[in-house]
Length: 136
Image 1 (spheres, rainbow, N blue to C red):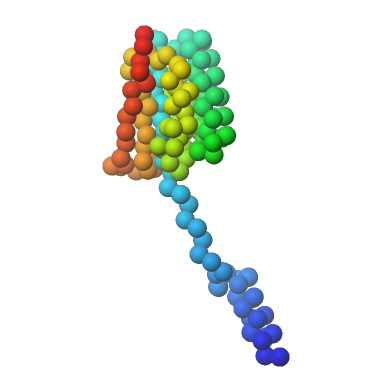
Image 2: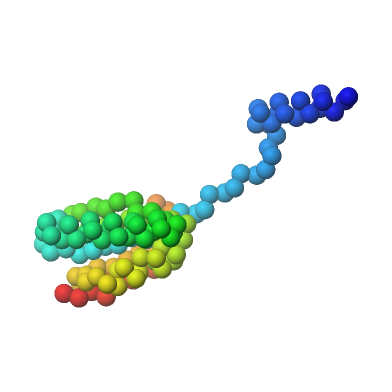
């Protein structure tokens, strides 16, 4: 039977990566949702403010995971603010998931969210800034 030698040759090429079964799927573009939360003072805020930020992050992380919309990557404290970093395939979708949580919170004047429609390490990536309805 002549099919067997051809089949085994094909399988060998497949195993060696010379022949591909299908095109690899392209990874979805990474987008970001960034929060800048203004704290009191010009350093790290108060202990209560930091605890409040950590609790908010837990809420946001859980909501993003439950919706399959992205992930919360972490935060940075300093210069009188807390910056929170969230990443996923669609900044608008992430905003839709976290906005209902954010609207229940009070933020100091100057706090905002930024939707980044592409990788944050690239230049000229479209962004949309959203005031977090600051209230003192």
